[in-house]
Amino acid sequence: MAISKQNNTVKHTSPVNIQETQRASVYSFFSCSGFLDLGFELVNGQPYTMRMANEIDKDFCECYRYAREHLKIPINVAEDFIFQNSIEDFVKWGGKARKGREDIYRKFEALLKTDRNAKRVIGFIGGPPCPDFSIAGLNAGKDGNVGPLSSKYVRLINQEEPHFFLFENVKGLCFAEKHRTYFRSLCLKLREKYFTSHRLVNALWYGVPQYRERLIIVGIRRDLLPGFSHKRLDNELNWEAFQWFKNAVIENRTKWPSAQPYNPDPNLPRPEGDRGIEKLTVHYWWKKNDVIHHPNQINQTRPKARTRPRYESVKEGNSIGKSYHRLHRWKYAFTACYGHNEVPLHPWEPRRISVAEALATQSLPPDFSLPPAMRISALFKAVGNGVPFLMAQQLAEMIYSFLLTHDIYGEI
Image 1: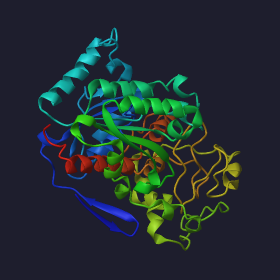
Image 2: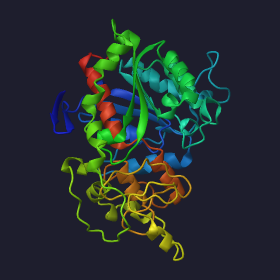
Image 3: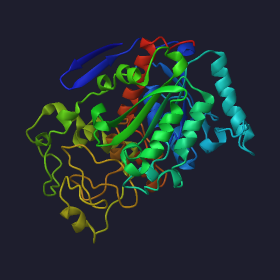
Image 4: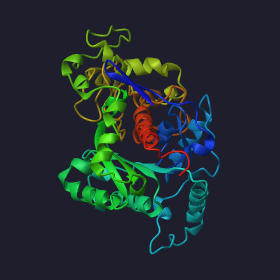
């Protein structure tokens, strides 16, 4: 794989499409609407094949199927491709599948057996639910309603021993003092069978027009890397080479406009600044994805007449508060976290952003859409819970590059 740097971006070139029998089989957990999965599916050269997705939420499963059926180049999703159940149904206790869920486990195990017999590389990817580790969320930690699912995912990885894994979660799991002991325990369990490397990354670094910090852990099975160490894996994964924008450039605040009074003019010129980071702005992505004509542009709420003055009083770029913060057209978006009344305001219109506009700030391809007839709260939840597409794609390419470089590809 050739890597060439130009200004603040990094471009990658991959080999031509790999034969189907040589592609790595990827198993996805906590799949939501499949943003992370799509990142793996659309890596240049198509080195990965999605084998299954696992999501307990019915609306998310519907979004997953709908999105892939309506892409310009549809990605086939078989009827039995999506497992709509808890990840706990795949975890064995005392060597046995969960009581009453044996059929689901047998189906899952049959897929794995097929790939193992074909000697294909197997990877697990997933981002366990994060509200219990989010400072802005419940912050209940490992004892919350969904906090324990992180340890279930780790247990499943060690149980089935895929060749590699990716674990995604919020910053708080690793950096909040309250959760640090739990995070270390997860790492210790993973390191029993894997060399691991983790980073706190920002979606902005990967070209996503959104400030979104996430913890990423990547692991490669120990027996595949004789003579390796955690430190060596950390160095050779080459995280920085797959980041298009450098943090020092992004965080130079003089390059970004400050909050300004609301202005309904959609044609305001871009202020003077570094043109190199224009591609990280809301305005650039909404134009790029032609959100006005996107199927999910209809999925938006309009303020009532009595609340319109309140909407118009909020400055463009205002980041104070949750219910009335407004995006800036010439800046990146806030972290996509769409709870009750937390959908940000449109930069130059007196309304909250649409689902189409939210998808663009998650860097989805312009032909990626969700079911327009679904209730708007479910659609925003599906968008906010997803891993930004471009970040997912570059992480997938980073893993592929490492596997290729170390001859952990094709048949095992």
